[in-house]
Length: 625
Image (cartoon, rainbow, N blue to C red):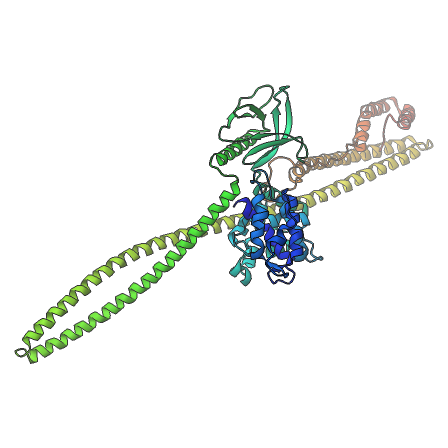
């Protein structure tokens, strides 16, 4: 598709937008304004009286599109330069402004309405991919190709069900997609699966720059300066004829441009000067050294530049124009094959009918032969000569019938071979459908497994929360038990302060105190054992929690290591029960020695040792339960 065809598509929309009455005609005053604006955006001189002179012989009424076309070709399009110097984007913007005011009126309450910029980009893409006939429509295959490109840019799958439902409408199935029905379908948001407005806009702009703006690839590369020989990072934009580089990705300040032709070549360089993934672009006059971020980017850039050089060598100015022509040729070939197949079926039916007719004739001939033989038997002598002539004629007819039958049998063999090939093809398609269904079942099973893993993760989290609550209850019980022990010690001190009791009562109380202390020690040991077991359980659940707390994304396998969340830890505290036991065990030996001395020294020293132990307990050296 050349530049003239691209401009005519946009101008057709502008002309129809000015046709308010839909009569196919536009007033001369409006055509003057349209012509002046076209000359302005195309940077060509405008003759204000040329339109009047061109339609001097016509009446003062409006002008049809057929009448305006000779003026448009002679005074405007013939003056437009080649596509390498003129880009139709400004003409597209002018004609979009005219036609959008009249035809593009989306519902205001729709949340998925595309902004004006995205609608303009889709309108331009529609014009590029539409058929070269008026009124402009786009076939369903091209619509599916465009939607797949947009969904691929958003990293989502195309909703083929919604697309098929829209294609199945009578108006679309008979006439194809118009740009307004296409924009209406995009505004529903069903095709893009409800993606965010910003993501959809970025995807549409990316596809617009790739197809309409003819950008083969763009991105950041490090470029070695020709004068200072230092490295600078530039934003490169590759088109079929040039490789431009800018200061940043907003493309406001262009630093240079490299013309691509058949004399250019790309070579991969080894790493040096602290740069890796290097390659160079050689022209007749200069060699440009560049460095990519990784090996994959270098491979993509070298392949894209080689594609641009190949297009220039083959005399092609756009990759997607060539792809569009190839897709159109493939559609035409499919239609031809379909027509040929239908014609072949019709011929096969005709042959079947001819075969049946021949068989009927053969039966009639056989019946006539039998009747002739009966007549010959009755009047053999009288009509022998006539019978011989008739028999010769019948033999000729039978021979012709046999030859015709042999021909039909050969054709039937060919048809059977063709039918066998068709059956094999149908069998292959059925096997392919089976494999696709199996892949779909596997994907469904993977999603179900993912849901099971998520439920298991939730159960583990709730179980860990229950364990933490039990641990806190155990800690509170330990603190209550320590307070109880302290209260008992205070009561014992008060009892021992009473010096009026006799030595036998003190000895009995001492034995009771030892028995109580032994029980308390056993309780403390049991409490410590429970604490150690609880600490082991907490560590175990911390490990499980670290492994399970990282969210599992769709399609992601369950990791074997710990999660990304920090493990929950119980703050370390000194165990008062353990400290009480240690302090009680230290003076235990001393108390035993005092008891032995008391048995040997007599009851006179017993009271003195008891007062000494009471003073030690009051100073904190000895804890008596």
